[in-house]
Length: 399
Image (cartoon, one colour):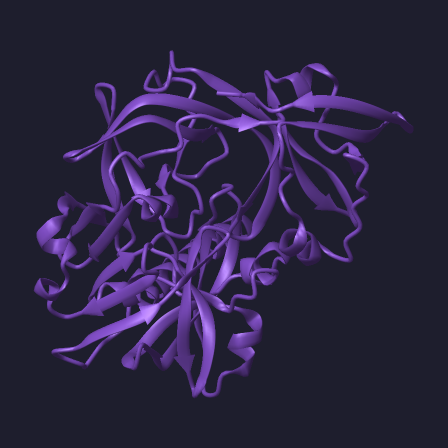
C-alpha cells in the first residue's frame, strides 16, 4: 500500500513540475522588451519556399530568420551554441503542425537587433526542426516569433519586399488604405482571425511560418466542408515542427470564404485529420500589403492588385516529386487523376522524365536545383515491380 502511495505522490510531483515549467516557459517565450521610442525602421526581406526571411543581428553577427507569427522565437542548435552568456532557463512540451509532441528547451537572450532597433530580454526556444534536413537546406538560423512582434507595428509589402516597423502606426500607409480585421492572440501572442465558410465561422491561426494559403482540420463530425469539390493527395510529404510525415491530404475548393469585409472566391484549401490546428498562412502576403498590431488586436489588409485573389484551380501532371534515400521518387499522387489511373503511386523510383536522368548529391541539392517540368506533355519512366515502365501524360485540370 505504501508503494502505491509513493507512486501516486511521485506522479503528482512530476505533474506539478511539468505545470511549473510550462507556465515558466510560456512566460519566457512571451517576453521581449523594447526601450526605443519614436522609431521607424525599414528592412528588406525575401521569400524562401514562400516564407518571409530577413536579417537579424545578434552579438555582432547577422543571421537569417523566418518571420513566424504562428510559432516561437527559435534559434538553431548551431546558433544557440555559438552565443555567449546564454543558458537554459526551462522546458516545455509542444505539439507541432503534424500533431507530434516534443520537449523543447527555453532560453533568454540579453538582446538582438532588427534594422538597428534593439530588443532586449528575448525569450527563445531551441526546437529540433531547425536541425531537420528541409530547414537546413534553406540556409536559415531560426524564426522570429510574436513575442518580438508585439513590441511594434509591422507592415509587409511583398511587391517592394520591404518590412517597415514603428511605434507609430499612423506612419504606415496601409492603416489609411486597408481594411481593418480583428485578430485574437493567446498567452504567447500568437494571432488568430475569424473566417466565415458558408454559415459557419472558424477561428484560424494566422501563421506566416506556414508556406501556403489555408489548411483546415478534417473532423468527421463536421459539416462545414461537405459538398465542395475535392481531390486527394495520396502520400503527401508534410514538414512541420519536429516531424516529417507522409499522409493523404484532401484538397477542397471552397466557393466563398469571408474575412471581415473581404471575400475570397474559389479558395483551394488543404484538409487533413492529422493537422493540429486551422491555419491561414504566408500566401496571404501574395495578395495584400499587411500591417499587424498584435498588442492592439488588429491588422490591416490592402489589396496589392485587383483580380489577383487566390489560386482557384490545380493544373498538374497529377503527381509531385521528392528526394528520399538518395533517389528521386514520386512524392504524392492526385486521386482522381490520369497519373493515378495509369498506376503511378507514392514512393515509386523515377528513372527519367522526357529522357532526362536526375542525379543529386543530397536533399539540399535536390530542392535547390530541381526545376519544375514545363510544357503540356511528358513521358516519365518509373521502376515498378523491378521493371521500367514508360508512362505518357498531359497536364490536366485536377480541381
